[in-house]
Image (cartoon, rainbow, N blue to C red; front, side, top):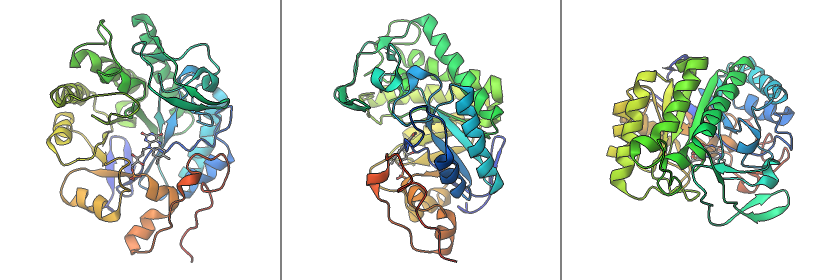
Length: 357
Ligand SMILES: Cc1cc2nc3c(=O)[nH]c(=O)nc-3n(C[C@H](O)[C@H](O)[C@H](O)COP(=O)(O)O)c2cc1C
């Protein structure tokens, strides 16, 4: 399959198969409201087949980073409307990644009284807060009743997203954030219906996906998974358990008819990931993670070999607003300056040049 051919993911019709991966860039200020910088940044990148906008928090206590945008308030939703309008005006499509950070946070970041997680187990190490570096807190273990509120907050944020004109949402169940914390035995020590067996640990992700799909329509909902990523202490170190958990999860997602499943894994062609794909049975997106930057050769290879339907591309899109045109024409690429990844101004965010005309 050609990287530059159109494709349909649920209700989303893409002009090409290059997907801008979700990228946290912390430019949304203390209030988490998408501003002119985000409007410009995403508008510049509208020629990608789909933009998955950065991890965005559904409620105050789920915020992981200063400068991260939210979808918890009407003011934040209005900011997203301007972003959606800018992308649509240039012919693009954009969904937003709804991300509950769980224990990857600190009350100095959220301004709330507590940080939550599946179990009262802290991440080893420190996080950057507005007050400086601080140890990750021991999270409050969500009660069974409080978990229903988490599901409701994912639903409300997703509703705000589509009401603001975004084309849909991607549920973040990867990279060590809350839903992944439930999936992973290293962070989930519960003994209720949300802990213990692979089926129980997968339950919350399935419930969130089903509830969001029921609210906004499954064809506008994607989900991201990162099996055995072992990041932010969400340890999944038993391969048999990983396979049981994620293959069960994929089977549970199958009847929902979601727009796509996106998997971040170093071996997308291997049995674990292709087993997820087979069981899910719908449109499939891959990305190999942080170790090496996604290249044109890699992306075209996955499509040519039938490993995936679309490819999520992160750092190359950060540095090249017109990546699709550059890849298609064999043009040279701008080099990424990683020091501006998480800055708070325009540098390294809206000033990477387009090809000269
Ligand atoms: C600065 C930065 C921020 C990221 N933020 C997110 C995020 O908000 N959500 C997410 O699922 N992945 C996030 N990722 C992971 C990317 O989506 C992607 O998987 C990763 O960059 C590897 O792809 P690449 O080699 O094409 O860059 C981030 C990566 C980087 C470099």
